[in-house]
Length: 181
Ligand SMILES: [Fe+2]
Image (tube, rainbow, N blue to C red; front, side, top):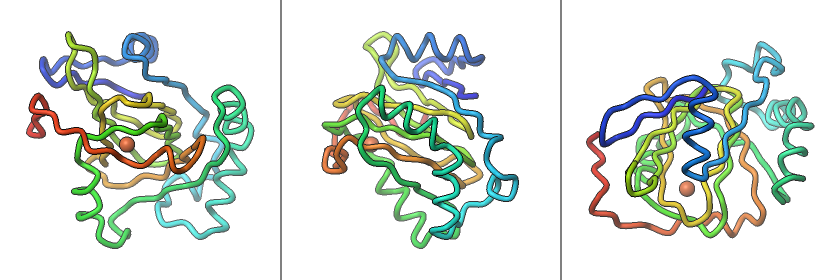
């Protein structure tokens, strides 16, 4: 289940209901899928063949289609990241910059972990959403954020798009953001 860390105060928010209510106040969609549906051999696998990616998509097909129907997503795919990913460090460096999109950024984690760092309302400031398998998040359009991996540096996630072009990152220079938290 996702957990929140407020960067300014170090406060942590845990428990599905608390996390959900907090993310509601920040207009961040949070849902949960049953990650145990995934065949056991894929629950801990972070380098996937095309066939295995299709297997992940097929496993969550009804969840994906339900979310897509409610929110207008037209296409979806699978992203995998791990130490096996060529140039992972460079890639993460690129990721770890606050930016916005004209479309919301949806990720459904099917294996591993990841963090979205999001600029919240004025009273909250930046907060981390730590995600694990089964967690589904949508960062609204125009909301400054970035994504990175957690210490295990492994993730498989489904990405859903209205139009893939809407997901181009626009850098958001923010003097209020301190990456050292
Ligand atoms: Fe993004």
